[in-house]
Picture 1 (tube, rainbow, N blue to C red):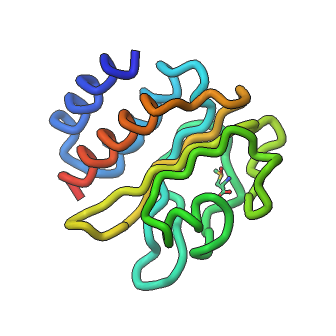
Picture 2 (spheres, rainbow, N blue to C red; picture 1 turned 120 degrees about the vertical axis):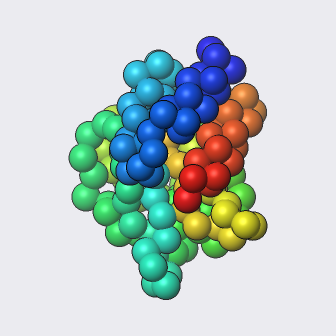
Length: 149
Ligand code: SME
């Protein structure tokens, strides 16, 4: 399933000249097609500030539009430059809850010319749903998106 989505992501990027609608469509595609992706969004570094700002997303609105570097799973990925897979959010001390229904989360950084400029963040209402296939798939998505940033 994730493999067939790669082509669709590439197609969206080809067809949408503007970044925001393109990212919006990717979020909606992923949320719709992957049963355990319940919230899909992009965060980007907010200018020169040491914080992330919410970009396009699909799912329930969140209060966490700004996340300081180091805070929550997202803020930690801004500093670590590494994927963060959380099988059980209740086991995390440094976690920002967006919704009580969320059980698991995955965050994959987005690099442009080697610089960590943002990330894709996915929340799941299913416990422990993410595998290495999700990591590889989301690395593919962030690498494709990086080409148009
Ligand atoms: N749970 C995230 C905050 C962002 S929401 O999931 C949309 C975190 O701990 O960084």
